[in-house]
Length: 202
Image (tube, rainbow, N blue to C red; front, side):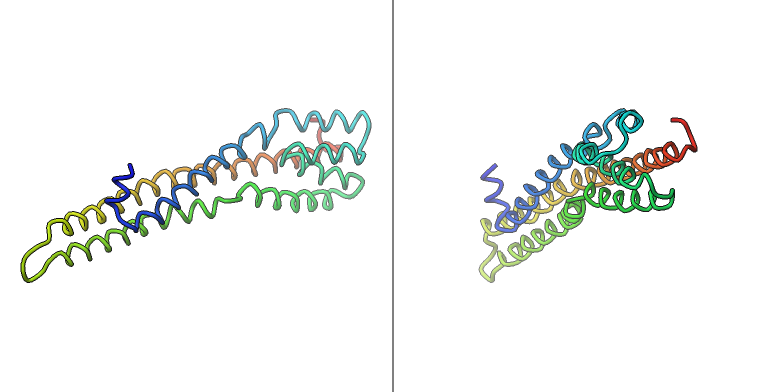
């Protein structure tokens, strides 16, 4: 592996740095965007049961907010349970916007790395081509410099694609996952408002 890095020349180092960041972000998002952590099963039903049993209190809201992103959205609605339907919905939408922003954390960075990695590889290719042309001299061709230029060009192009392809796949996957989570949170929040205002039973 180290011999490949040496053969790829100095343009490989920014790509290696980008790959380390991409892997770290992918692992972090895989952990943070687990469904059980974002949308715990049965949370809305538990909240409604506790509300019917003991109403709303600060301890309940603090505990609910600490549980999950969905809990934060539901807690925003419960804080305004004595207000009109419109105020409850507005508070839920505000909390939902903040939660959605947090769920999308680091996705812009991951998408940027996936987008620029081929360009960084192309830059390495250009550097390799410059070395190839530099191997030409009036007395002939320098085989060592020619081989090194070819290695720089090919390795950097390949490594840029190796970073970009999984980076783009995971970026699109996480974006779709977040959009699905946000939609489900909206549905559960609307159901909470309708139940508390007596418009539906469950």
